[in-house]
Amino acid sequence: MIDINSVSVRIGQTMAVDRLSTRFDGGRLYGVIGPNGSGKTTLLKALAGLLPYEGDIRIAETSLADMSLSQRAAKTGYLPQERMVAWNLSAREIVELGLTGRAVSERAARAEAMLERVGLGACSTQGIFALSGGQKARVLLARLMATQCPVMVLDEPLAALDPAWQRQVLWLLKQLAAEGHTVVVSLHDLGLAVQMCDEVLVLNEGRFVAQGVPEVVISPEVLRDVFGLSGAVRDGHLWVEATPVGLG
Amino acid sequence: MIRMNAKLIMAVFGLLTLFGLAGLLTLGDVALGWADYTQAMSQPESIAGQIIWQIRLPRNLCAFGVGAMLGVAGAIAQGYFRNPLAEPGIMGVSAGAGLGAAIAIVLGLGLTPWAVEVSALLFSGLVSLIILGFVARFPDRQTLILLGVGLSSLCGALMALVFNLSPSPVTTAEILGWMMGSVENRSWADAGLALAGLGVAALMIPALGKGLRLLTLGEETARSMGVNLRQVATLSVVCISVLAGLSVAVAGVVGFVGLAAPHFVRALGIKDPYSLIWPSAFTGGFMVLMADSAIRLLPTSNDIRLGVLTSLVGAPLFVLLAWKSARVWAGGNQ
Image: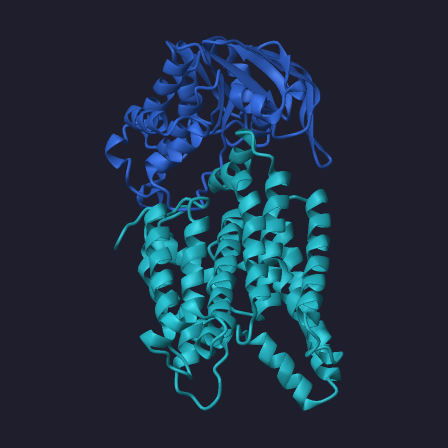
């Protein structure tokens, strides 16, 4: 669904993503993992068309560079790391922002359904400022889900969520993938990536390290060389030593 | 707190304005009874007719029009800059218009018909062009705010220079009077200017809807949803510039209305930055109409200026609103 061919993104003097080539298919949940500064956010922003890049990104065989703003918006939904909401709109009004251009009755019904899906059906008329950080994150996720874009790109959607809701959100994303969407999400929690993602893409210093099923890709060598951790994946779970490599 | 939708707010404040206009036309230095009122309607050339048609009605319409322009400009400024403290003067256009008016007065053109208004418009247009030049290259709201602060300061410094070089205390007083705002002795043409400003804004505002709404979630989300930020910035700047420039050209500097009118609408339940634009026109218009009527009717030996009264009355009300909203705002953006 998404073909990335030798894509480079420069931020100032830094090559934040360096000649990256990979492919994300529909119907799968992809985790993009890597240490801080590895280029995860930059790659996701480039996929959403928010940063200029060299190389080619194709979504459903169409180059991102050839799409108009509205065509791009119809194909790719994006949830940024930043969770600032400027005005105290109700949860339902926020979700309805993802349905701009639809009929009023459809917007209201779809927004309510999406809020139910993220467990906030009872909060639909509540102002966003009155919600907790985790609830706000789920409202913004519901806004993204409401768009029904074939590609959904989420930058650290689990931040501020409690452990139960982190898993719940990843289950929701897995459901979206099962419905045929291509879901790409950046994660810091390697354990959750192992448990929940169909595939992971490992980045380090803007470069491709590995991609594939988590049990294979998150090897002891990758843990040591990329993340500075000592550990391994056993029986579908990540086991990591308490002390990072080099501090022991 | 009372919650109203946008149409209800416009209907309520529209009706209040209509009733207010009808009643206020009979009140003033020369009180008019029902007989005078009916005579004025049937015989516009009569004394009562001239008082109503040539003096009070244009003045009242100017007051409402100026308030409406400031309300709309304030709502757009707050929506675009995503800042509840934004107001029409944020980009320096009002300061530019004020400088233009001051220069015209100091050059002795104060009594020349339209000279002050045209000069104010020319200078506000010049400031707007500088801003639009910046927007073409940097459509970023932080840059615009910084530029606005710079241009406001520059215009303020030039205004100080105008005062400094003013040829006489009378001229200085005339400039000061203009700076404090008034719709006294305004004509139908002035009311027409205000109406024209609102008409121009009405043509552009629909194109701002999607952009202002989605900017609620930040620039990245808005862009990812197909919003052309450069277009939104340009339209917002043009709207704010036209409305702020015209309001200063028509009535001088009338402070606080552009900041407060959108907040009054928010207090009535409208939070969506696009939906509150036109209700802000009605609340802003009503505020200035009432302020100007109070000035006309208050028995004071010296005329209180319009801008002084709007700030004197509006500021405490605004503080009350801010106090009531403090908990809500404090909960945002954790």
